[in-house]
Length: 406
Image 1: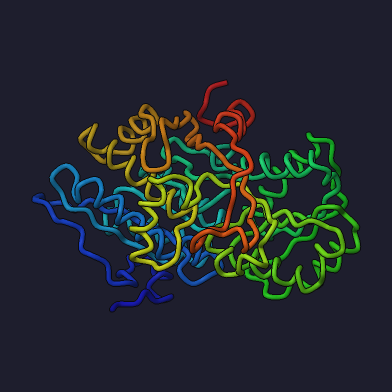
Image 2 (image 1 turned 90 degrees about the horizontal axis):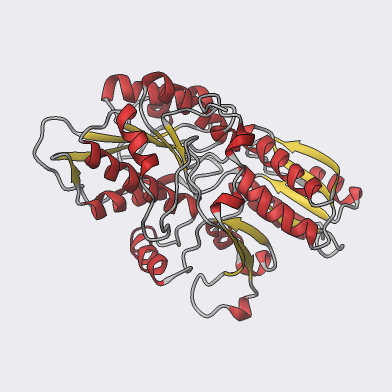
């Protein structure tokens, strides 16, 4: 077993697999097709993404047939430490030295923006599957990127709008102090105010904060009806646990978990998360097809897949299909083919990719149900509502993507 080291990531080198995985089928051909996953393998997003993203990509390659254009496919995965300079250095090194054909994941939005810059400069496709900021298809959009699974606008629009209309018309935000948190807070405030709500205050917490007590005290003192958690991963988990200890919900306030995933619910426990609502484009037990795929994933990872794992599978499969269709990995040919083809896989049906790169997944509002209502292992959620992609995501005309003509 070979372990990825911090030193390797910082040097921008490709990482060896952290887990022993089945080898990808090799095909004849002189040049290997390489997929580079810029991931969080040691920080707050290691569970929602991490090694699980590599497993999902391996599954996509296997389902595609194990090779493309008569060439074997190799996956590189490195730890970006959620730092833009490390992420950009890793992406540049992979492209210049290892000749990576496509970049994926990206972890935090700040590190993902570093990857996107290199992708644009090198004209190499970037499958944005980890970062959530809606700015990836807005002011920072690129003709070589496609944004999968979710974004801050859709999360905010569905959850923020629904909770405000249901009576939670005053909000206080605890926000992750970097690009993702700012975008999620901004987009949620827009949704809340559009629904007639008001923001009473906000505070920003550094990424990886272990103690949220001072922030929760301020949120409680605000007397806002809703405390919005504009964070993710272990930050969200710590917030929820400590909010329970401070009696936030017992005092009459509601928690709006603007981004929570099944891996978070599994870590925290269904009892602690009971009643939480959140927005997502994927839930493992949605349909017979998602259950079948998830069982394959769980055979490798032992825990249910989340949104980012499903998103990495979908993005990789669609990219491979485009490569096969155009007969090359050139970004200038592959990305237009991806946008011209509807996305179809085990959880997407005829989903469009807009010109700005936004993948218009259908979005769902979920609620964590009581433990007593669970019928099987990991039976955590029930669906409350669904929103078509063209309604859930920001209209392209409002994103001001610089390469899109008005």
